[in-house]
Image (cartoon, rainbow, N blue to C red; front, side):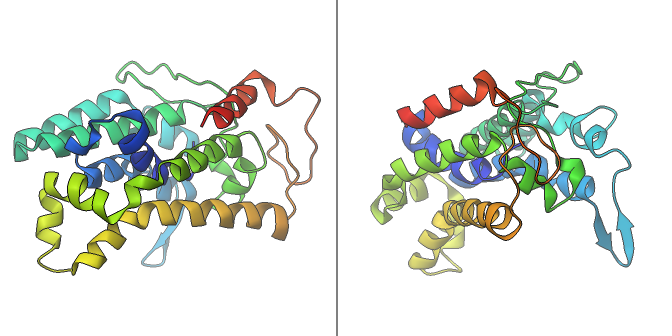
Length: 257
C-alpha cells in the first residue's frame, strides 16, 4: 500500500536507480506503476455504476488475495504482462517499462501488514508490516490512516527523492532521453504541440506532489487524525515504541536521499 510513490517512482527510477533507464518507455513505466490498483482498487473501495453499488465483500481478499485479484500485485504478473506486450508489439522499451513499473508497485505494497503474493501462483504473502493495510476503511479514511502512521515516511522518502531528481523534468532531458526512445511521443506529437507533450510528461510528478500535500492537509488540518503508527481509528494515540524498527529504516532513507 502506498499513495504517491506510484506517481514519483518513474522519475526517480529514471534519474537515480538506473542510469540507462532512458531506453525504457517512461509512459509504460507509469502505466505499470499505476496499473495493479487501477484494475482493482475501485472495487475494493466500492463504486456506483448505472445506479448500482459495486463493492467487493472482502476488500482484502479481492485486492491482495487469491481467489481474487491479488495476482496483479506480483512479480509474476509483471513478467506475463511484459511478455504479452512484447509478443504483440515487439517493443522492448514498452515491455521493460511495464515490467519494472508493476514490480515497483508490488514491492512497495509488500511494505504493509497484508503484503503481496510476489511469486504467484505461490500464494504466500510477503509483508514487511511497516504500516497497516487500511483499504477496508474506505476511500477517504484509508489515506487518512496511512498518513497518520509510518506510511507517510515512505511517501516522504519518494517526495524527497523526486525533488532531488528534478533534472529529469527539464525540457532538454525530455527531448534528448525520453521522446526519442518511445513512439508514443511521436504519435502524440501529431495531436499536441511540443509544450503540451512536456506538460504531459511532467504530469505524474505534479499529481503526486499535490496529492501528498492534499492528503496530509485533509488528514491532519481538516480532520485532525492523530499520528499513530498502526491505529485504525481517529484520535487514538500510539503506544510506546509502536513505530518500530521499520520506521527507523525509512527515516534513514530520507536522510540519505
